[in-house]
Length: 272
Image 1 (cartoon, rainbow, N blue to C red):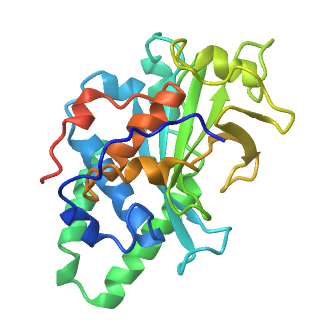
Image 2 (tube, rainbow, N blue to C red):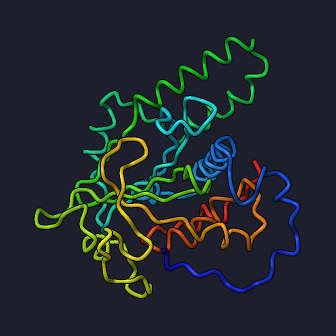
């Protein structure tokens, strides 16, 4: 279905990282949560400067509505990017940021990560209570507000319940009044690189090349997603550590729909 093509390169000579997975390149719910946390850590450490206002990543936890995990919660990543080069309105961002939706700042996420490392010194019951409270706060915070005045796109990375690999979802927001956020023409106009050989025609089944519309896995509202059917074959060409799994995965997937990982994140060392 998708128009991704893996190369005919031989399997990687080193495969020692694969032993850290239950069944590489497929992920369990726990492994997916782990790779999400690693990618979030890279984002927090990367020296993005002003780019951090334009390339926003947030780690979320939500109630599992698919009954595919052993827990009641699932983890996913959300990336928000403007569709043009206009600067974010700082005044509006500050105003919206004060509306008790409580999205954690980069520094607070670092502090929380350090606190988790000290959790071993706390009684187990106290540690569990803290984890539950944090999870509740994350559920309340979703969906994330945006402070972009102009058009923007929200990408989300969820674990696909069937393929057991990351799946890239996305939605368009604040488009001109004459453009529909659920129109494939809008997707092609704003996201698909002009040089990318993605099929330009739409099928009668509501898809365009490797892109389809379905109900969002958390909210249930219509959203686009990139079909992950060939990703296991592509990921099989790499021996990815869990720290680098999503960095590698986002190269072919993000290129499909205009999502490019900043170099500062891609080059960020996985070592603390």
